[in-house]
Amino acid sequence: MTRLEPYYSPIDPILYPIFAFLFVVVGLAFLASFIVAQITNQKSQRNLYRELTMALVASITLGLGGFFVFLASGIYV
Image 1: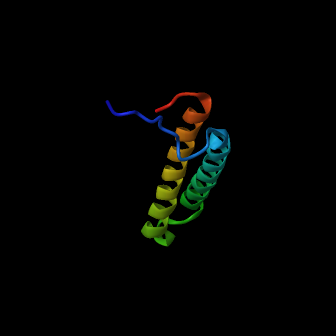
Image 2: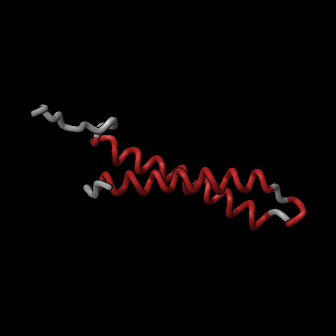
Image 3: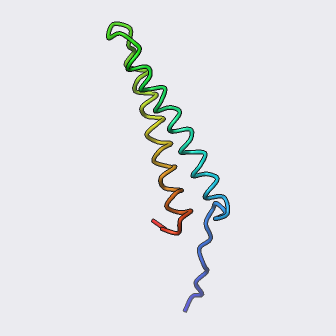
């Protein structure tokens, strides 16, 4: 039989709460800027590329933040 080696995470588990906090804060900042841009700009002043970029970055960072929140709390997904 072959010997199985344990899997080690590429990121140290001690860093999970730090990554969770950073990703959530950055995601909320982009979400806030997206909402402010939607409220303050007129429809004629809006830029689809900028809106999609802000929404995409907010979505990705909040998703990663949620993932690291799960990992930090011991829910390994």
